[in-house]
Length: 446
Image (cartoon, rainbow, N blue to C red; front, side, top):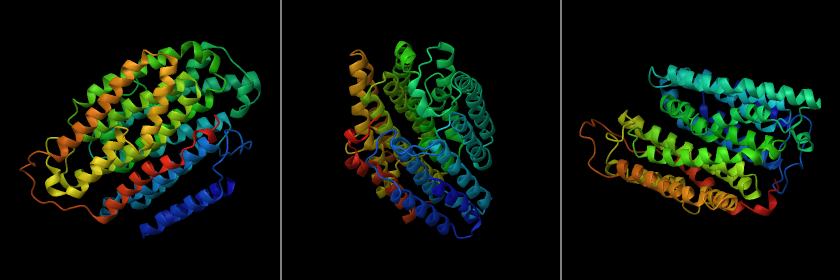
């Protein structure tokens, strides 16, 4: 693991290369290196060290971070054509990847907090530096202050745990049980905002709408998963008090997810609709984690990986339309099937995965989460039925609105999809649907 980290540091000078494909090849080399040095049949605490570790939870999310970073570079070709601070952009992506890698691999709670908050800086630079409109400053401030407002209680909670135990190692926390309400709320609020949970989700649509395509991809693909990863790690020592209070988060998430699903039908901005659909999906993930059973943990993890690939691919598709029509409005992005019939196939494939159609990972995750929530209370069946139905509803609504109908009469010129874009979409869709074959519930021991 340390070898891999030093190789990532060694990669930083490559971001100043003029040929961008060297950069992508270096990242692919690191991905293959991680594959070769990792065995998949492991349980939660089998490959641990004091500082940097990699278990099955870390492994999947590290792979997702590297994969999305490669696709971010592929999706941002317009920056290279304009030569718009390309070197700084690539350096920013490498710094963000290092922060994410360290967040998912450190076992010290304070170091986890440091890199968890450190990943916010390059994301903020992406939004403010390469966003499309003046409102990106306001979106950046929303992202910054929502996150920082709840990060101080998390830091205080970590210091309190250290004061009680004289230890900050996450895997030693399972031997203690701190039954304190203030500690519980201070530790989990930062992760609920990052997911985000309903009531603290307003920063997400703003950040997505104003971010460039690379910012939207990393936000939807990996940054939202930091909250779920933190909850999965820290539930080790908060389990007793969580069993008393979990109904609060489950009720808020399920009701909020249903309301957000209805809200998706009111959106006229493509990126805003995709961002709100992310909030609806993450609400089911929060509910699955809070139920505190095996199926919930497994389903949350699978859905996080699946949603990371699916949502990132949909933001790529939205950007492909934006580069041609220079608008994200549903009313202008109409009749796209007349111009790019092959791209409408990719819209259908990724939106069908978004509604949890087989054989996507989203289906496996949602089946596990429905199983876990039904075991917690049969009343949750009502909200799960509505969430699943409206998830299919707004996905089909988005597809039919964009692809069908009469195209916008103000279009002056247009060009069809290029091979880079089709390859990028294939690299989103293929692992999302092929990794279902690898899922083995018996091998993942939480």
